[in-house]
Image 1 (tube, helix red, strand yellow):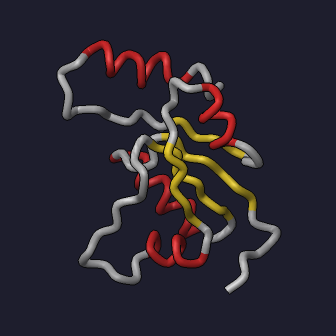
Image 2: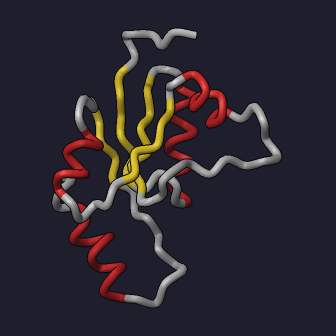
Length: 115
């Protein structure tokens, strides 16, 4: 299945987070975006109970992809947003750590290479 060349590419930083994941799914459901999920993970986690979900179909067709990136690294950010029409920077909602400095570096300082 070929990708429509009229589709525009967008990048969602933090696309695996709570709000970011819903944004990714909504963009895919709209049908007019190629969605690049820029996140610290090496791959997107698919729900094993949904074999033909919107996300899994988009990955299979090439309309969705994962771009591993550390938002504190300008070179990685530049590579992630290359060719994108729109960039979304979603709060990664790091609730699994008590490391204030790490949260500050990712949430606050991490946005500067993106903007």
